[in-house]
Length: 274
Image (cartoon, rainbow, N blue to C red):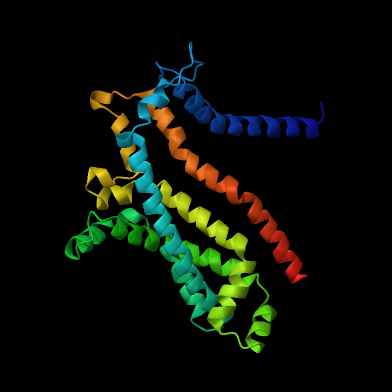
């Protein structure tokens, strides 16, 4: 066996190990959701059943928390995209000696863990009566996601040719009109990427709503997952797996629905640039 063949086999084995590390939890998730006596072992159920899904498909366990998550994360994502577009436009289109330090400060702020600021944020929310409010929690989620969204949006906005805006300005358009009618339509894929990334990060955020929301009826699905963990280490694994699949569905559907549009938008942008 040649050295090249051995290296290729070693690379294939390494890739298989990595693939197994990702596939095994997903396999357990699917199999456990169909097993009435699921444990932490990955095994095929003796008699597959949908009882786990029937048990979690209630208003208290799934529907209300999922609705709360959609309202919370959807509103925060929309606010993040709007603010990121408005902040990225001057950074992309106007040159200033403060642009680079500002971008570096934004990049540095993305490295700060949210746990480092939760104590002062909690105290601030108590003082201004934003604690236990969905809109207050959405504002903080949007603010925590905004730095990286601005960085992403600025990079996508740089790919839109400036000459197209200059042509719009020649026709009498203002910077607001050129942003809304020229720049943003051409960077549709960038908007989609920022929106998806922001939504996914907020959708899986547990700590922020757990700290800022106190009423059980306002808890999102990322927090209500605790209902499957009982006392003394008892866990209903089958129902937990079924709920996890339902909890992942909106993110998967969001990606599938706009994946084709993202690809088409990139092709359109390249055609315009060419």
